[in-house]
Image (cartoon, rainbow, N blue to C red; front, side, top):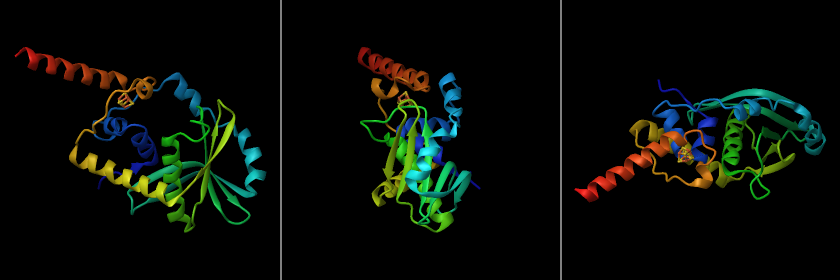
Length: 204
Ligand code: SF4
């Protein structure tokens, strides 16, 4: 049986499909950097204290493992607030900054994937999620709309198609996006190889 993909795969695909290709098709993984280690240490739960009254939470569930057989998706969400109106609100902390004052695109996809899993497991409807950006000390609310959930389900289908066919996604090196990417070394090698081939073709 094929192993289920994870919510982190969905986040990575949303950031750049090549990352999901490296991980899920070629089984190449990024080396762990100091910044990543730092990110893991975010488990200072100070940010929860202002969210509990804000969300009128009566319970905080931690490190919840969730799986959907329907989607072939699994994931572990750091926090889920349960409000006094029995609303489930997933939350995550990120060692980065918001984008234009809101959540970054791939973080939205990640929280929407957790929301879909929560909906299936707890038989509820998730309407919003929260992300705390540690560096900016900012909490951002993400509306979990139908269109966001459909977008994520479509991305899950695309990841499975990519794994099945082994087809490499078409992605261009973009200094803005690729600047801090740990897979740059592989992508640059490919770009150089392609450029060389093109030059050779011109010479021949
Ligand atoms: S270097 Fe750029 S294209 Fe390559 S995996 Fe990273 S973000 Fe994607």
